[in-house]
Length: 198
Ligand code: HEC
Image (cartoon, rainbow, N blue to C red; front, top):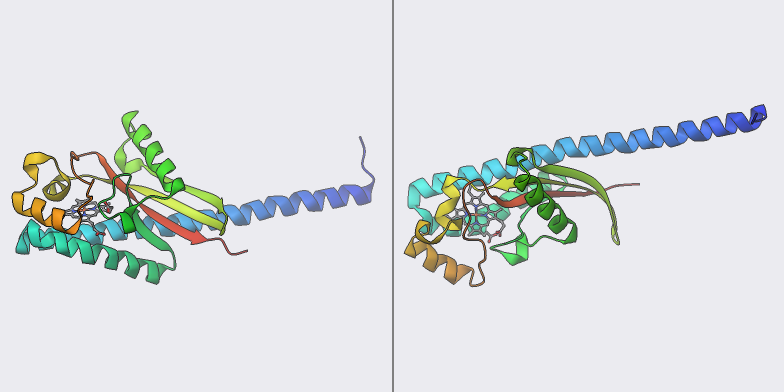
């Protein structure tokens, strides 16, 4: 079918504008992904650095308190400086108030578990998506957090957690479910969220 020239021009302009809107949205998402990935490695690196330093200085019992106060502080400092909401979430959170995954995060964490058990490297587990929610449209990103040796003193199995740490955890987190992990398992993920301005 042949379109008259005016209709053809209109169709062409429409097609081009759809294509360029898609490109702008893709570029925005790619830029978000890049910033989110940096923020994720920042929070993981800073929390880990602080933790290892404190473990060497005062031992694991005092470090429970450090973790309780400094991890959320690091998360809010990074959120403020980047303008994105940066948190750590888990399917088995120690701190329900801060670490509980929402519906989208739960779905991604379950997908990470599946990818991990089908042989993907834990370092490669990340995802980025545009998510429509009742409150608006958001760019969302998640990156897996793995369990390594230093984590076991507070997240490991029976004998790895000392009596002192166990008592401290019981006092601070009576409903703790964040123990019993082994090295290489998925402890949770960094979750980054930013509203898409339109
Ligand atoms: C000294 C004890 C201690 C060690 C060691 C430790 N953690 Fe934690 N972890 C905690 C405490 C306490 C919390 C709860 C913090 C809070 O109240 O927000 C926590 C919370 C978390 C959370 C947030 C989700 C949740 O469960 O509330 C993640 C993720 C996490 N830890 C990962 C790690 C990783 C990875 C390591 C090893 C690099 C590690 N932790 C080592 C004590 C520890």
